Length: 288
Image 1 (tube, rainbow, N blue to C red):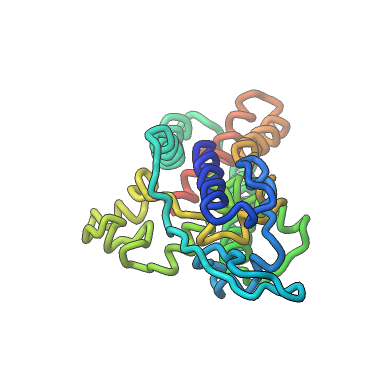
Image 2 (image 1 turned 90 degrees about the horizontal axis):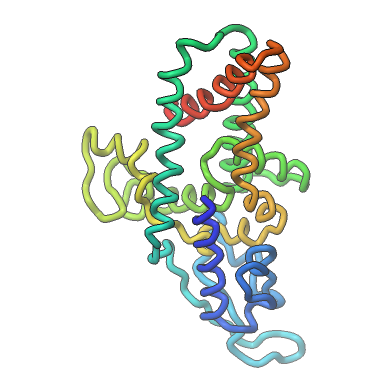
């Protein structure tokens, strides 16, 4: 995901340079991703559809009279980022392997020898609720992806952090993939359709199940967040949280470990909390 972040930064910088030097007041990769500041009225809520997607970058293309821009033009954006380095592909595959196969291996090896009781069940349920119900369902899905409700900054930050702890990617990554899925449901362009992949290959039976459940994560095309999630990319608060994505993943693993250690007063209790509230929780939320 770190490589994903760098890839998105490079894409945004390229878009800024290709559009116009005046489109962004700051055009370095670091500054753009910290806070994308557009010229007056260059980006408005009307530029986004009801799903939060944009068709392009709007720039000034004519003179200004009486403080009003007389002409604008839209520069089309690609829905996916076509260039992918081998380093990014490797990072993408490692992340997918860790959450799918890594957690399964940990469960098969450690579950038989770890204690299992009220503490473990409580940690599993509490962390599941925080990450999947609050973080993914309410936060990433309803609030950020579909904008079903508004929330104040502290609540938005809490939802974003809980969602990151689910280890399903940053807010912009998750939202852009989900919006692309809705735009191209079960057709070419849908990143995880059980009927067709992104290379127009028809899928049936087990091949469709594998692709939609696990396979797509290993080699899917990187969704252009400036097309599908510009509202997220231009949010300074969410960008700041997303930059520390792996920190929040670690918090989601270490928090139950600390509680388990305190409950049992032993390192075995900490390991049990780490597994049942962390690794095993990731396993079941991913494969549920």
